[in-house]
Image (cartoon, rainbow over all chains, first blue to last red; front, side, top):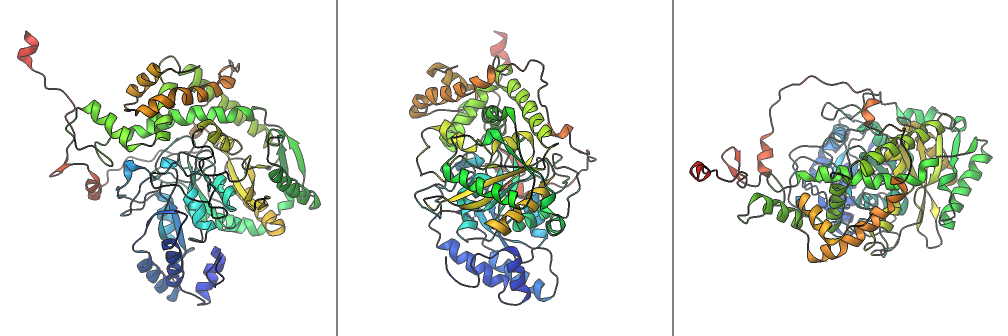
Length: 478
Length: 103
C-alpha cells in the first residue's frame, strides 16, 4: 500500500478531509481513478467517465456548506445494479453493451446523499458463483495472493475496497455473495434482511433470496451505507415498510454487553480450517472477558440448508433468466432464424456454462413429475430452517459462526467441480433462506497471510445488533 | 437420481438452450452429482410441514395505488431493432393459409 494521505480511508476520514480542506473530492476521485487505471486485478468492468466532473460539483457543494451525508464520497457499484446512462453488463456476454435506462433505487439513494460513482465492478455472471471466475470479463484476482480467487459473486466490489481502488462498494448477496468475498479479502460485508433494501434496478437471480449489501473497511462504513440505501420503495413492493433505525446513532449509544451471543454447534465441525477455528476461539475468549453472555445453541436443520438453496435458487433463476431472449435488448442473433432456433442460439452464445448448468437444473426441478419431490420439499425445508432461527433468536441476540469453511482457494481449483464450489456457501446460505441478516467481520490472517472472516447473524430487521457487536469486536480485537 | 444424455437434451429443449458438444458430454455427470446431493433432502419426512410461500406474508407491505406515468424514451435505445416507435422482432406466428387448411 502506498503511504499517502489518500490511502485506505474510511468514510469519517474522508468527510474530515473535506471539512479540514486536507483534500478535495476531485483529488480523492483522481487518486482512485489512477489506481483503477493501473489495476491488474480486474476489479472493474467499466469506469464512470463523468466521475471527475461529479467530484468537482461535489467540491462546490462542500465549499457552499450544502453537504448531505456522503457528499463527494466515491463508491464502486457491482455491475448487477443499474446506473442510468452507464453500461450494466451483469458480467455477462448477454448484456456486454447494454446501457442502463434507469438507476437502481439503492444507487439513486447514494447519489441523493451526494456519493459519486467511480464505476461498475466485476462479478460472477448474473451473480452466480463463489469465486468470480464465472465472468464474461475474466476472473478477478485476490490482492492478498494473486494466484487465489477473491470469492464471489461480488469479487470485484471486494477487491475494489481491499486494494484501495474505492473506499466503499455495493455488492449483492443471494447465498453469501457479499459476505464470502468480504471474508476472502479481509473486509466487512453485510447481507441485510430480506426486504430491508429495495432491489429495483438490481438484476434478479433468485428473487426470494437476493439482497443488495454494503462492502466496506469497517462496520461503521457498512452502517453508513445501509442507513442510506435501506427503506421502502414504491418501485419494489418486496422492500419493507419497517422503519429504518438510526444505525449510526445506535452504534454510539447501544451497549454491546447487553447482547447475548449464541454459538450454533452445527457450524463448528471438525471440517473447519484450524486457523478459522482459532479466530473464532479468540473472539469467544474476548466475549467471555467482557462478560458478554455466550451460550451454545442448535440449529438442527443446518445440514439441509445448502441442498435447499441449490433447489430453490436454480428454480427461480431459470425463470428470471428467461427474460434474456435477445428479442428486445442485449445480445441477439442477426441470422434470419425461426423463433425457436433464435432463442436457442441467442441463449447458447450469450450465457456461460455455469448459467446454462443452473438453467438446466432449474428447468428440471420445475418440470412435471419432479416439482413436488424437489421444489415443494425445499420450500418445506425453508419453513423448518426459518423455525430453527426463530427459536434460537428467542434465547440469544446474535449468532457467531465462521463465514467460510476455508480461506481463499486457488484459481481453477474448483472450476470443474461445481458441487465443491457450491460448498463454499455452506455457512452463509442459511441467512438468505431464513430472510435474516448477516455480517462478515475480518479476524486476522491464516498461516498463508490470507484473511479470515467470522460471521455474525441476527434476526430479520435487527441489523443494528450486528453493527453494535461487530463494531465492538472490531475496535477491541482486530 | 441421475440424468443421461437423452434427458439432458430434453431439458435443454425445454429451457431453449442449444448445448455445445462439450456441454452435452459434461452435464450428465455434473448435474447427476448435484441431484445426488439433493437425496439427503428428498428422503426427509416433512409430511406435516407447510411449504414456505413468501417472506412478504410476514412483512408489513402495503400495495400502492396504480398511477400512470410517462415511459422513458431512452428504453428504445436498447431495442434490438427499431422501426419508428416500434420494436421489431422475428416472426412469432407462422403464416396461416386458409386455402391450404380447407384441403
